[in-house]
Amino acid sequence: MLTPLFHKETVEIIKQYDELGVMVNTFNNEVESSYIKSFVGQDLHKSGRVAASLMNLILSQGQIAIIHIDESLKNAVHMQEKEKGFRNYFEEKELHDYSITTLKLKNSNIETKFASFLEENPDLTGIFITTSKAYQIASLLSSAKSKKIALIGYDLLEKNVNFLNQGLVHFLIHQNQKRQVYLGVSTLVEHFLFRKEIPDTILLPIDIINVENASFYVS
Image (tube, rainbow, N blue to C red; front, top):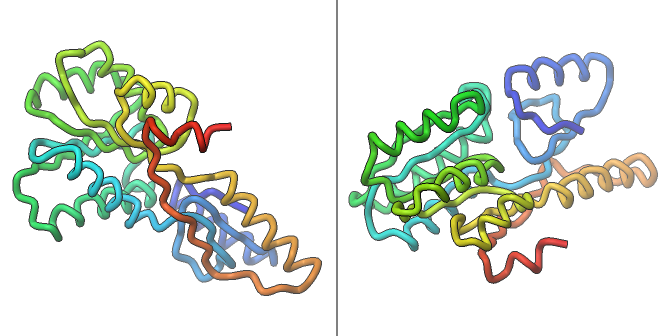
């Protein structure tokens, strides 16, 4: 079972596994390959569209930044798909009162580069973070209290939930990685023990978390 964060390397290793007769299942991030037996996760393109629809509910207009943190965008299909879905929503709905820009950040320069970005974009009203690191941006925004910026990110990390409860993160999209792994393992167990067919794809719901329902998801 693999979580293919790095697309190029994943494609290469999957081919090697196939040559060795090793079955490969992926979860969380989907990779198109005839060597993969099954995928468990979410529709990442639709996930981006869900984030866009939430942003549209929060904001009536303005500038929105799509932020990718600490991964190479060219080699990260999961971030590409989320961005494509996000942009596709605004294009399809013909929402011309919004402008969307993309910002790529590395942990080594995240504070200085983001601070410069805020100075260069004083009309920024919304941020969509394509990874689980919304807390890093929320932490930086907490010191810029004069700015009211809508923030949407992924995953119920403790730091993300803390900023959600403080009102600095507006929504989190729950990818339910534990459920993904459970389903991936259970299908393998049922296949090897009971000869059940492994489904090509198992898609999980795209759960929207806000301050009102977060406690139901966090154990």
